[in-house]
Length: 518
Image 1 (cartoon, rainbow, N blue to C red):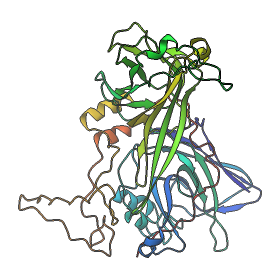
Image 2: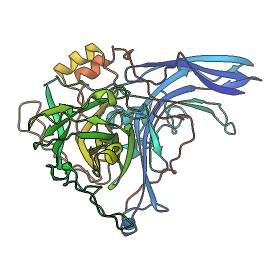
Image 3: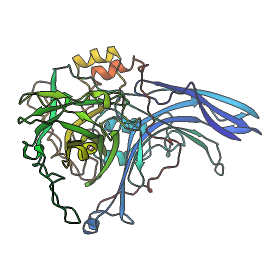
Image 4: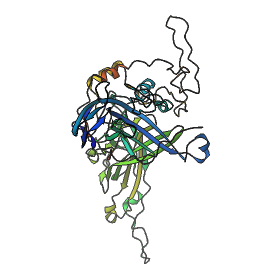
């Protein structure tokens, strides 16, 4: 017996609005009685952090690690049988069952009603003929756990690994084949895939620039020939350049505002130098390094940690680029030729900026320049000791977009109803919101025009999304216009190269799920 999932023309990665279709292939050596065949499309954002010794009384978990698992994507497709039917006997041979999913725009875990419907609450309920295990004998995700967590509504985040035992975002297809009988184990198979989201609408070009600048000045020169030798020989006369005015220059790095970089694209950077004093000699750029620094914010309940990752985009040494001319007037600007970085693309392992319930990625750009007054190779000829200054520049609030443009119809929809922001929506958690206090629910207007109905008092025995009567406090709002439009759209065709998760089917490095607070 063997079970596998065969995808139809799988791309390098999937994105929002893509159709994921394929077949469940079962090879049998002898007759087998089969009940239901269920395929699930799932995405998980998992985090784990060590509890500090002074805060272990707050968490009721074995060991020193707490975890948090958000079901950011959860869809179910029953491939067999098509309707309620009894288990049948499959004969030996190969059997194929087709399935089809469409990847949504936003995460599902923020939606209390969707969690109740798709995952069941407390393991009971779900789709179809639900039994005590959900779905007629199939275990569904315990929705009560999701309801107790803090969620934000956002676009589905990209696949993410590289933080063993701390954080990962994975997407996969999972098939479960039910075999009726107490002593018969169900057959299961799981297939991972990479995911990269479409980018949000880009703001209109305002022809403005964000910049980081820093002035500097060299010290007066030290003549090489003015030094006494080891054997006590008399120094020669000082050269003419010893009394010159040291150059002073201001270096600025500029990016279009808002500062947006694109995956697998060069950095749209401009480097400019401005002459601050009248000097007779040039300043040279001798080295340049451009690095993109990613900060991954990991959260479990009220615990937080930030991981720093650096990608070197450009590293150029042994340069000799003159910054302007010695005859330039004061305040003259010179733009460094962008040939040093215009052909260097961002590494294809860089994920776009994102923010989901328990993980966030933001970026900064760090630039390091080495500037020389006098080239090192010309020191012997000029008799002067060259000076080299290392000048760092940093640009924060850098957004990295995936480069996958949303369909034009979706962009038109956002002009009517903007897409969900990257930032958090209303916090519906029993835990403390690290981004600020929980907003209060406003009174509901009465249906008959009477006075407003105050919000129900919460019961600590029930999750925040459910009232004391085990029903939602409010009916969920209808989907926004862009979400409704997304149901009739297909995924974009143009997409950049992206590796991201290099082993999407490798075993998870995360510890077993443990969470709890006293």
